[in-house]
Length: 332
Image (tube, rainbow, N blue to C red; front, top):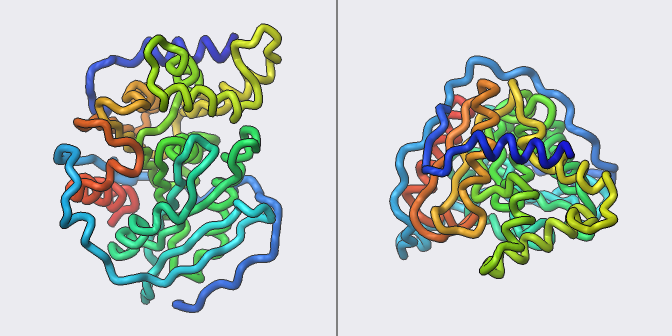
């Protein structure tokens, strides 16, 4: 089947050692409910320097990092569609000129999590001069590709209303964690991702649903990996290993893999994993391998410890390094 072929080809192309692949204040009223629309192509981004990430400190959370509280930005919640989960929060400071933006996508196995989990990170990025948006999306039992449709609609909503936040709609980076990292990578690869966003930061991204599904059934698999396997079943609305599995099940699994869409013109990416977390760095390496072969800059960084997703940013040096990568991606 095509899914197995894609997975096997990509897996074979990836080395298992750690590597780096060369890589105003007037608020907008909530919109009237409208069905999400597929993202429109933004002007082509060319000639942008390839961001690089300096080495990060080891995985340590300090009291000082937790105590820092930036000056509160303006905040407001907006509807980008009619469903209850089709909401996003905006964080921005007043500005006299257009500024770049960051769209954040939360994780949670595609079945839990909330935009409010990211308000501290959003405030920190807003303090650096970004207009920041944290989006919710429909969760399981909504079946794939509802989640991708939602985050794409959230991004387009932000672009359409960019003037309200003094946002430059052509300089947006998407940052996602775990399942949100998977959705962020989708925004950077489906179609010509580089025309949609300037870059993607994916923290512990689930890149291969097939790999996640199989790892969850391995002898001694952790509870987190078993939970991820079940989440894959629920996201697809089918069990790929069931004797009576419909071909559409494998088609959805393939469509859900960013590697299936990766190619020339995609957005540069930073893919960050911990060495001992439950979503192995092989996920990031698989996508980086395909992107690099297509001439797209992709960086994989594996850091010590077990931190997963957003907890990777608790280290102040690592947060600063990721923020600098975003700065470079948007041309600051």
